[in-house]
Amino acid sequence: MLDAQTLWIMVHVVLLVYWLGADISVFYSSFQLIKTENSPETRAAIAKVLGFVNAFPGIASILMLPVGLMLANGKGLSPISGGWLAIVWLLAGVWLLISVSAASQRGTPLGKTYSNIDLWIRIVLIAVLTIAAIASLGGGGLFATNWLALKVLLFAFVLVCGLGIRFTFAGLGPAFGRFMAEGSTPETEAALRVPVIRVKPWVLALWAGLVAMSLLGTAQPSL
Amino acid sequence: MDWQDIFKLLHVLTFVYWVGADLGVFYSARLVVNPKYSTETRATLLKVLAWIDMIPRYMLLLTFPVGATLAANLGYSAIDGVWLYLVWIAAIAWLIMVWQIHNREGTDAAKRLTRLDLMLRFVFIAALAIPAITSLAGSGPYETEWLPIKILLFAGAVCCGVGIRVTFTPFGAAFGKLMTEGSSPEIEGQMTRSLNHAVPYVIGIWVFAAITAYMGMNHEILFGT
Image 1 (cartoon, each protein chain N blue to C red):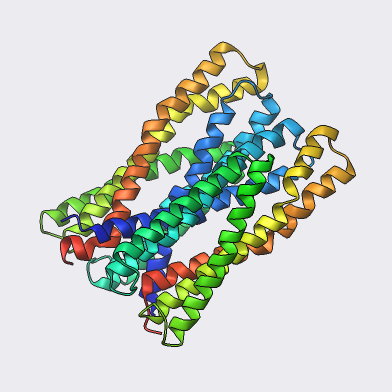
Image 2 (image 1 turned 30 degrees about the vertical axis):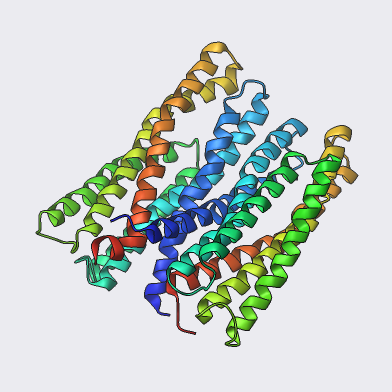
């Protein structure tokens, strides 16, 4: 009765739960960070909530691709199988380690190195996924159906949005450090506000991408 | 792609925002009971928690009409036509009420509505469980084996939600005292105990929600229908 495919579908959706579903908490609490009526202590506590919850979308997004490829292979829609799938899992595992280490070592030179490697992995992956998806849509690629190729393309788009969030939010950590050290001044408040406001379109675009991917996954339309 | 696909997507999204948003609630609750923080910080954290917590509450109310629509379109549920419209109207009215309870927190109207809401939940549990059981016994209104089982499991999740409500009541009273009297070991103990008391029910909701989701995604493979 316990078909492996049924479990992979479940894992695939649970990853969405901890990506898209957890993201709303991150988004909402980021606005609490810039509320001037919240004291530094309060904002530090909210930053803690934000940091904890934000780890989940980070991990879920990395695991999404290998799980999706397992499903696609199980449905006969992707030629990446057997040893190739094992390699995909191995690479995803390494990427996950690098990404988690980048977060845990944030603020140190080692953390910076991890973060740079993670960035390059993402850039390469965006290129690879985009090429694979477009080739498949053109009829000469890896994926057998157009909906799946489109999903892969959207995944690349979502990764781009993730990079947009990352670069926009890069200033938030230092700005928050300055705010905690210097207290609330027009300058420290403005420095906090800018990244939180500017990240909004990236986050909304990322969510839209994920919802579109979910629709393609549930409907699996013949495009 | 048709309407059924859109409802399927909505059904998945209600699960996503139900369980996913719960994570923020679960973690911030731990910070609210941390006596190291000032009462001001704890009050703000509780406000953040309460805002995020509304999302799972709305999703719990929306997932049933969405699921009922899916089931009716599949021909597996006799709740169709006018009855299905009534289910939708009731769900949306209830959702507005839950939103108003949050919006008017602390007022007498909110307290009255909270009591009404709790009673409605008992009605809801019965309205879910009884037809599910009669369907399993073979006399409808739901076809197939998996659908009534799913609805029963969902009723289990709603029961856990009531469990959270009940176990969390002392927390609210203790938090009110914290705000007026400041921290004391007695108040802190009452809050932590109340929170710990609610944890199994929270996990219960996640387990029920996960099993129902698993069945929903895989009923064709698991049950052949």
